[in-house]
Image 1 (tube, rainbow, N blue to C red):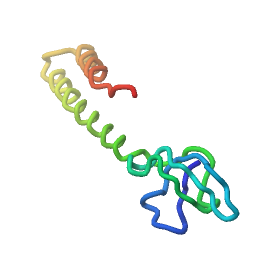
Image 2: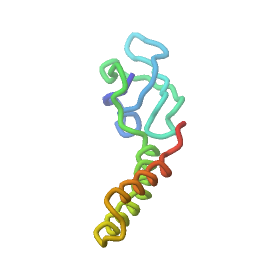
Image 3: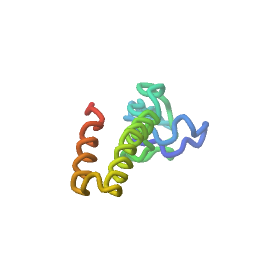
Image 4: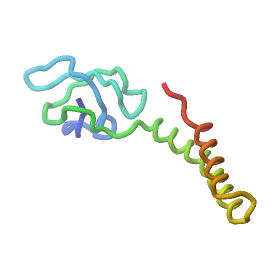
Length: 113
């Protein structure tokens, strides 16, 4: 389940989090959060109105995942710029530049969890 927009509380903490249904009451659904915006909300149980829930995973990426992607992008950007400059100066060929960039991408690939 995905919490689309909690209508009865601040949306910042729970909007877009994923979870599984623990129980269904007469008015509210208890959800155990499996993947929130941060580790703070993981594992917590909260109740939501049924209208605030969507079947499936439609949430936003976790903040730590976005930061990790940004750091990988920063690590890769310098090599791309350096190889482009080297090609422009005639130091290496375009093919060599592509090989260096590919090698660096493989080197900076985030570990699989």
